[in-house]
Amino acid sequence: MKFFEDIQVGERFEVGCYTFTADNIKAFARRFDPQLFHLDEAAAARSHFGALCASGWQTAAVWMRLMVEHGRREDDARRARGEAVAELGPSPGFRDLKWLKPVYVGDTIVYATEIIETRASNSRPGWGLMTIRNTGTNQKGEAVISFVSVAFVQRRQAS
Image (cartoon, rainbow, N blue to C red; front, side):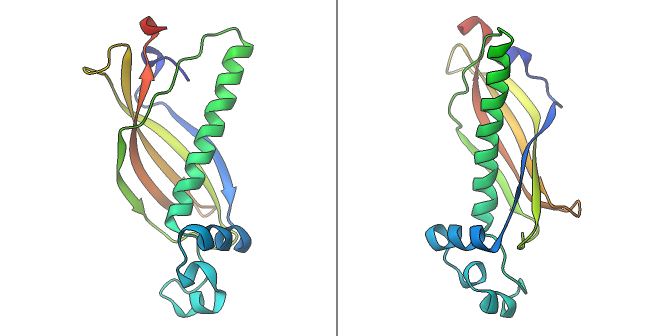
């Protein structure tokens, strides 16, 4: 992770992409969101979605996995260059979660993050807060998920 002082509002990056298949949609749904339009093609065809689609929670969980993997790759690259790596702290939450369009079998979603605000933490010396807008866009260029999250980031003088 970059140190808080090195994070710039407006910075945007892709964290990865993921292709949703019938198998991974159904596997997630069986464990976490067992609604028929996530589990059964015939039932999904009769639903307001018209076809099997991913759980919105799956689209969010995929973002989380890709975000963590992206962070690990970035940290490994920093260490390889001999740079110090800041600690990423906990997240106090998220807001404005929107599932904008269904994610269907075969859709590939590209996930991106944009820094929209930074501020020093008043309650935790040595930490700053970074607010990010997270999005997922399908292969047609249509936004399918959007939400804003906040995370604590270590300040340089705390290292």
